[in-house]
Amino acid sequence: MSNETMRKFGYPETLVCEWSNWAVLVRPGQVTLGSLVLASTSEATRYGDLPADAFAEQATAVRAIEKALTRFCNYERINYLMLMMVDPNVHFHVIPRYAESREWEGMTFKDEGWPGPPQLQSALKLESPRLAALRDALIPLFGS
Image 1 (tube, helix red, strand yellow):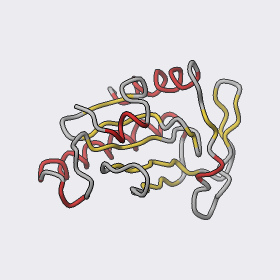
Image 2 (cartoon, rainbow, N blue to C red):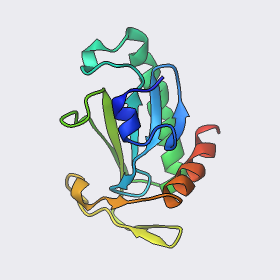
Image 3 (tube, rainbow, N blue to C red):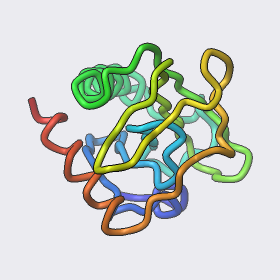
Image 4 (cartoon, rainbow, N blue to C red):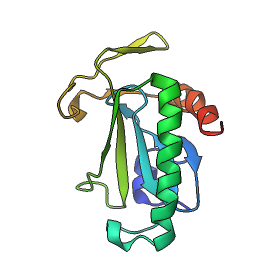
């Protein structure tokens, strides 16, 4: 199942992992290396309107995200931002944070906001095939 917000963030092409109530998508605008979207698969536009089992399943999704991103980019902190001003369905922007730049596929990813709030406007927009390569690098980390 998908919704408008998931499709805006490139679903199904950006899909990394999916459960009954949640999907993890690679964020096309990489604020920092490994930026993701944790999107509810429901049509809910209010966090409190999610079904009860979505909250329990969210814990599973968060553990999987943190384990995978630790292995992928060895973040120092992680931010979960619920910014539902433009995209209507329940979702979180997942931004790994780090003091020192990260390198991937010949690209440098600097955390422009460290140690303050993430600088969303500094996101590096990835197009195919780089976006697909990032997705493909992350998928196996969610299965282990």
